[in-house]
Length: 352
Image (cartoon, rainbow, N blue to C red; front, side):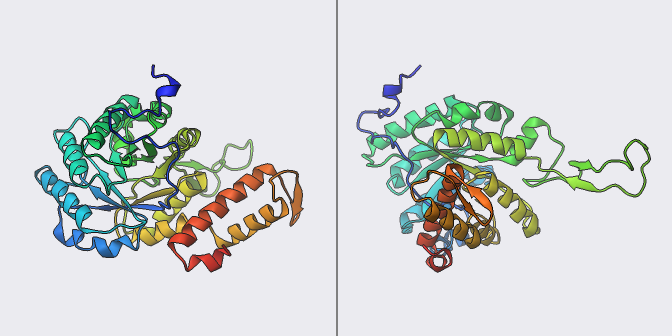
């Protein structure tokens, strides 16, 4: 067992000191780019101003014969662009693949100074984080990097869900965790081929007829349920306990923006900081959903103004507000400030 006093020590001689607090950044959407496709790489300079995070994807959706091209394309893309306040991430291949080691070694060596986060797929336990943590420290020392590269885990196996609390606490390098519903569904033997979202057959029915009659009566109302509620809640709790960020992952049906927005909003309300955008049409959805409503921010400001130090209790519009709602209000106001800094037009709407 590692002693607490050693938790924040660098894992390699010459590696940068681990961060004690995450950088304060707006990350409403993690936008995936397949870097082996040149015409999409060429759109990245324009994309940078539109999204909060640009992620070069090296794993799923990249054919096996294009893995090296994707890696080299990401290095080219990262080297040629100025990302400014927009995050630069990459999703490497899984640790049990033949490409993962070269992904990390080549990318850190070439563009490690610009890279903010490595997304690690199919994390099953703290041991996966420990391996990547040590490797990154060695490469940071070798290449004399001044800031640590963070790790973002994807929760996409039943074993990973079982160990999510240990994963969240595995390293000071942990940035956050994303829900990976498609692989998780396969791991659990769930009977769905959808990538995220609900399923029309996962539902509850209204009671059958009048109480005690046992008759069916007219057609019963059905209410579709959220397949991912339990897992998202468990992930959010693990992340919140460790001071890292939870994210909803992909929504695969690009033809159904309403369902995408509903799934993203469920995640936002439960505490997620953002979601993945796999298609340009999902960027404005994520931007809208993961930015607080101006009316909610206005009410939050009234709470804070009525309770400047967060103590006591007041009545606003017939509703009691106390230290708990003051904390909730602070969450909304702080997020509004981040959004206004990224999107100046939102500043007047939020009054910040």
